[in-house]
Image 1 (tube, protein in one colour):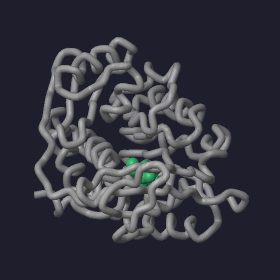
Image 2 (cartoon, rainbow, N blue to C red):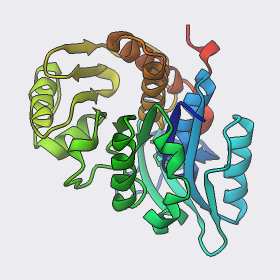
Image 3 (tube, rainbow, N blue to C red):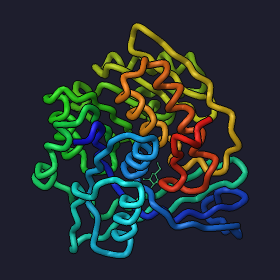
Length: 299
Ligand code: RIB
């Protein structure tokens, strides 16, 4: 049984790099494109696996070419496909990603496809995987009732839960079931109404989130690093200095790194430093799933 279970989506990321992210109504001549594995859940599962963690990925895909890409991707990274529901009546999803090659920043539109019809009943065939794991990691790309159902099952079975609230959306009733909440600055603003540009504002936002009942907050701040608080201890870390190619999936690398490090029972500061390093390393390569670093890539 895996130490870490991840619920989320697989999609094929179709990514276009160019001198900028085009404005509305504008056409630019891009420089390269890439089709590869993506979806926050799958990226996070790959990150855990490449770091050496025992991970189960729970998802739903179609029986089509991108569904094949999903299965091949998981096999290549030694992630079991036992918890992948394949539905011949659904399509595997895709994400359209525009990358600014100078900053590595991106804009994403994701069509989740098959997982959009995922039900709690289907999920219940795989719930034991979650219940028996030490850590349950998920995001907000599958239907919310399924996510909440799994968070509850995880907490009832004493798993440590991590919710990466991406993309940000209303999550009434979730807060009591979250141990670690890992928004980026934009997502943290969505939940708190506080615009975060520095450490001080991140602290104010995290106090508000702690007040909602979440136990530990990690606000990732992109090139500014991260802010952590559990109400007693605050930790601010600067981002690792790397040559950025593409930031797609950096948050996923961070969450995978955090889950892996927590599963090793490391002190929180060490876990955050490690996850920060994993996130930084992921930005040096193009793509999302394929850019997740191996343990040996972290110097
Ligand atoms: O976090 C990056 C991911 O978000 C991409 O791989 C894309 O598929 C979307 O799910």
